[in-house]
Image (cartoon, rainbow, N blue to C red):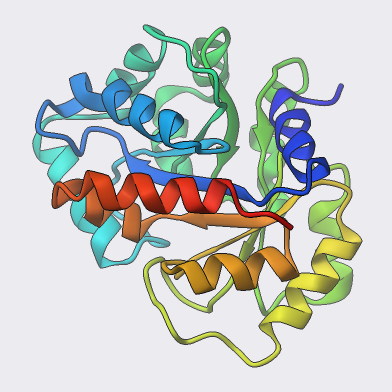
Length: 260
């Protein structure tokens, strides 16, 4: 079955527009979780293709300082995965939501229970950066009958054969990690990055989105040439926290209206 997230993003790609996925940290709002859908609606109205919703965790190995601090602010409000799932059950969105979490909170929640509780919500994708491909069988059986896609991450150091393995039968999108390191680093792109992204995009049957360090209009233009769109985290999280909503709305609108 072709999942909703795949169909939705592929339609944007087919329309020759760039895909733009902003990242937010659930609970990092003056109202805590009560402000989650306020932020989602704001980004949806600004034109986001989909929205990545981060789950706060005490050991966020893939997160840079901006997102790590956002997670700490959320945790300080008592936000956890159980509360986030309950909040996501309260309201639907027109754009798909993609949860970004680590395997430990999901395991503690109960993997089958977690997937079952997301049924009927707007969550259509799942990113778990610390779950190796070899251990995806922990969660994939529970996703087979669901409308949730498990999004694979492909790094710069991933060889061609490994890339083929990771993207085989993947749904949703391919998360192409643009740097070796954590989120938020900018200006440290390798010289062969564009070639790597272009080749990965040729290999994949579903959209390839570039993330980690994407923060400028120039980044959006560059990565839309080499891949199908971008994921932007630290810039969005920092802007929302600092109250720069007009700047963020303009940035999201610009990214989502990028013409190929």
